Length: 322
Image: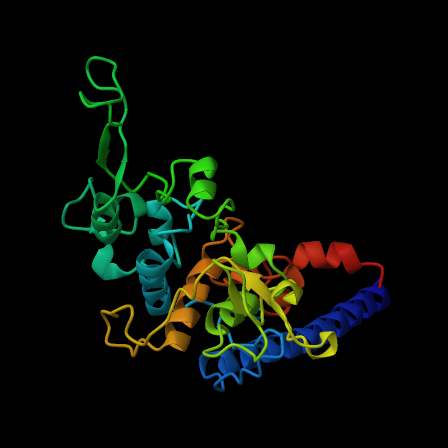
């Protein structure tokens, strides 16, 4: 019995040592990725159609989001993107969810049970309440059961934290009619709907060339972007072998000048910085909750087992026959 127990203990110790070594490699690589992302080298735009590999703080096992960046990103979306693009699947209160841009103490509201105590409840968040109130959303029927006023206009009311963030159009038909027959994409999914989505979005927004390649004439109402998938053959007057990469897109450059968005925290609003901030915000806002900051309970059981007995039973059960 003693020999068997001693052998079992050796097996468990050996297993624990292996797992600790693997976890060390994973965490060191993840931490390295995050460290590089927080202080990324300025990206080099070669305009060769390959997306820019920009550093991001949200990549890796220990990836996280900077709330100041998310706040600035929301402002960029609101002032430069929301006129054409909706944020479906996102409510105002999402902005104050744990890890969100306005999940900060200065925005916390008062607890109904104890007015002297602040609460992080998104529904009571002061910043979110103020933002929501600046929007008008459809109101329910009035006391007479009507949803329109005397002039036939829909009844509206100030927004509340529980309301979805309104889009620029009432429906998809209206969106198509306002954009040459094609509705602008929903930005709450854009970084997931495209391959290498965050880098793609960053490349696309910053990639509009100041001057067009000689021999290229975009059709009316379209713009050339070397990072937009497609074909420029319809506007290319040169030889096919010299045709530039990319395609024609219906979206005009959304960020065209430094300081286009005035940052409240004094950050210099270069085109690259504004793009970086709004892409962070869009990545954070994915409805599948990829935006959540990494926490111990979100990590694989095998990664935390050497340092905690919280899942030792499961690990022993799974590998007890080793």
